[in-house]
Figure (cartoon, rainbow, N blue to C red):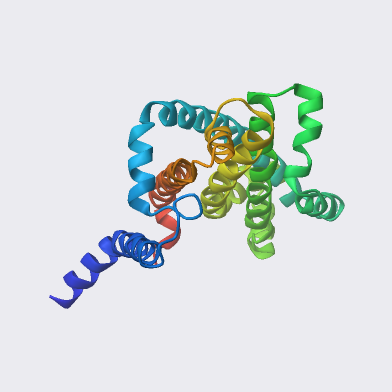
Length: 254
């Protein structure tokens, strides 16, 4: 009985905590009589979201598109670069400081440069999503390959396996748990990159919608946009979490 109760609590705890936070937010905002143009209540934000459901859906689809394309490019590029970095100590030492330095640059500072190169619109958002999300993929894949035991590699070499055989048949499969774990981080960062670019250099997307709403002091609509972004991020995170459990179940078997 206790075990079933614990499982049920684990299943519903995210919903309970989320609803509890919204209830606390609602109570504090109402009790303190905070004006809606400073901090709207969740109910006001949700009602505003329902009122502007059409425009929000249109802008949300644009953000989802730019995020998905940028994320897909980040996964493809990050996987290839991670394999390259992780399979060679020389390349690892040569490229890792460059990657760390590039990742330290605030991506919002690159958006004006992207606007000069590609103009205002979809392309800067895609590139920003790509730039901000490929680093976790590279690091995790490279780490997965670097943790391959030297003894195992020596045994495979003795058995006649080439370096490419070791990489394809052992290294990459062993790095899959690291790879799928990185996807959950990268996809949320991709949303951050898209919205950053949309607030600066776009005429559509949730970021643009929030900037337009804030210029009119429609703060409930701004928070409605934030809720939509959060919901999409959680949805994508859960999708890749389920994919990770399905594809790497073998790694958790004792």
